[in-house]
Amino acid sequence: MFSINFQSRVPVYQQICDNIIRLVSYGAIKSNEQLPAVRRMATDLGVNPNTVAKAYSMLESSGYVYTVTGKGSFISEKLQNGEARRIEMKNQLREKLKEAYSVGLSPDDISEIINEIYYGGEEND
Image 1 (cartoon, rainbow, N blue to C red):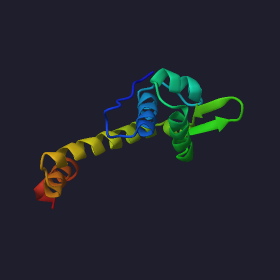
Image 2 (cartoon, helix red, strand yellow; image 1 turned 90 degrees about the horizontal axis):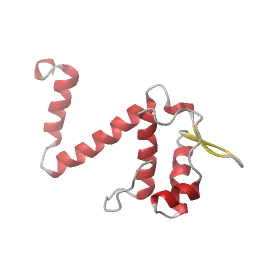
Image 3 (cartoon, rainbow, N blue to C red; image 1 turned 180 degrees about the vertical axis):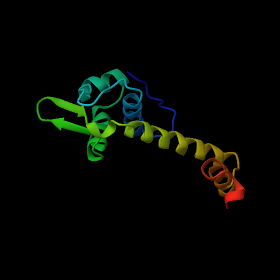
C-alpha cells in the first residue's frame, strides 16, 4: 500500500493519514472502500496497532473516514470531488514552505511568489 519513513520528523500516525489521503487523491482508494484492519495495517507497516488506530481516529474526526461497528473503517465521500487532492496539495505546499524557510527564503520572498501566481505580479499591488 505505502511505506513509512521512520527517520522523518513527521509522526508515524500523521504519515499514515497523509498516505491514505494521497491514495484517495490519486484514485487508488474510492469512497466507501474499506481500509485494511488496524492490526493488518500495523503488521504491514511494522508499527504498533495503536499508531494505526490513532491515524484512523484522526481521519474519522476530520470526517474523511467512517467506522461501521464490526465491519471496519471506510473512506467517506468527503474526500471525493477534489477534496483529497486539495488536502494533498496543502501538505506538499507546507513541506515546501518548511524547506524554503530552512534555506533562508523570507516571508516577503514567499509573498512575492504568491502574488506573481495569483495576481500577476507587482503591477497588481
